[in-house]
Image (cartoon, rainbow, N blue to C red; front, side, top):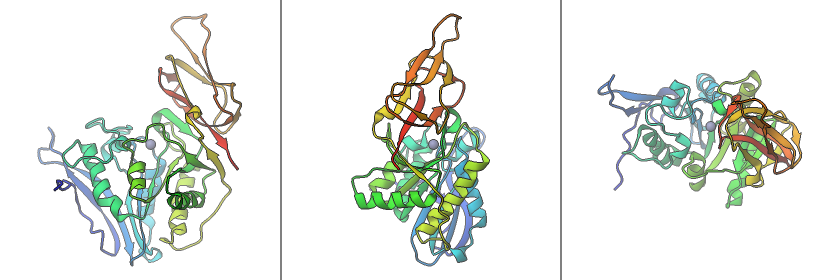
Length: 331
Ligand SMILES: [Zn+2]
């Protein structure tokens, strides 16, 4: 028999109305012997319709999701809901409090920690609670991401190519309803341990985003996030009202050739901006070594033709950093 989760919710998932509470995870430490991590959670329930599980702050330095979800928790009226909306606006709460991608407690990257462990690190215990307690309740799972401190993206909503084509079609329909400027058929470079994979393996409709980055948010990307999440809930029939559709361009990441990585440390010069087209073979970025003058920059060339979808954000790069992502416009 598997060990129960150490996390106890202060909300009742079966009770109607709005509840604001916590997922309380005991965490004994120097400054609090019998202390806990208190993850904010909101449950809005009315009747017996489907359940949506909404998360932001899976990575702690991405802000469009938390900005959209704290507001949704504050404003969603149960009389507009048919079913249940579970909102966890800052999933890796210790990381979110620190403004870092990974947890300051254990360096855990939430999106590489699934299925988690009930007797593991703080990050693994949170992952385990989602894996065994929250994901099984959900019909639709929506997880907000942005680029964080080290990447910046054109704003897109995304789902994965899946072996189950019915599940895939439902996810892409929800992506279309979100109505970001771009919609992505996403390829992962490192899918092991992802929340996405855990949800998809349970047969859930899983939708995610990349909405900007740089360790902050913009007015436009926050507007996209707030409108988009309501659109998805309306599309799924969980919230009343019509989907506010706007034009979206579909992008595809056909292979690993989408990604370019730095092979040297240095100062990065992007040669195209986000959303601009680039041809295969063209220089997408140059990396200048700065230890002495007179040295030619390293040229990083696009392996495919497409549109610059993501770029490294800070001005300095290290060997191995993802410098650019190029996606292909499909319609
Ligand atoms: Zn992220």
